[in-house]
Image 1: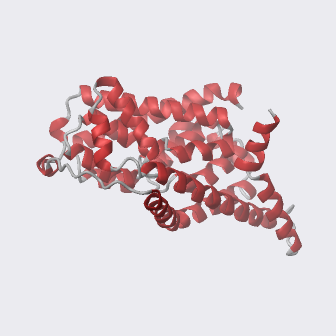
Image 2: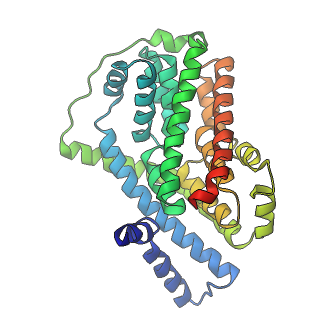
Image 3: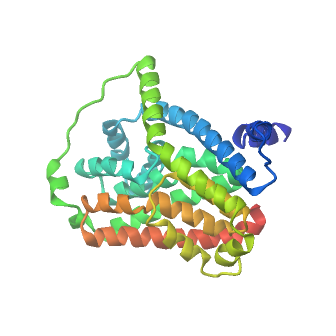
Length: 333
């Protein structure tokens, strides 16, 4: 028990970093008990914490991902049928890109290769929502129990969404140019350990550079919410007194574009101010799964009818999951 508490507090939440940044800010003559000082402390601590975790997670996941190039992934998925295929596609999504816009090119490749439409959509839903990075980062804010349940429910949503689209027989809603592309069987070269390490470092650097502005924006918003926004306002809008809090947070999250690294500081601040757990998680899922830029990109690959069904399934699933977490919150927090 002591070991797990140490991991949760000092490794995942990095309490040592919180103490260190607090001491440095105070030595610089800033009072962290006041709002401005507390905001600066929150901003520095959360930015450094997220970027440290980001670097470690991207490197580790990229190393794992180097064993699953697109052609090998396609072959793995092609071995399964029915629910098992949807499960494998959802699980594969956990070791692939961190945002929906990065997942869509892989989705297009899988569709061109002739994989069943339901399988490709299970992957598309899972990839931005329940990657391994989200599991670790959610642990830093909400604890292991909530993080694990979130990932399990996210996988269930990915499987169910893909299976429903499969049942609706929507193959004719894939754009014709993707079907005409056909399958190209090019076996990826076998990588050495050095190749994998170089690939992992390149992915860490390029991804970190890409998401850094979103981390800064997310931490800045989180610092404002955490130290300046009245708790009564958050509780009124996203707390238990508002039965529409989950729907509202989902609607707010859809137009935004970020990944979990940018949304987590906002979610952390909202939760700390009294927002319901389900509303916070629904906001995160909406941002990472249904961001407006990813919807625009997906429209290039699928026709409006299928796009509308995909958005509808994900939105309804996110809202249901949000209300489920609200019900379970007293037993998990």
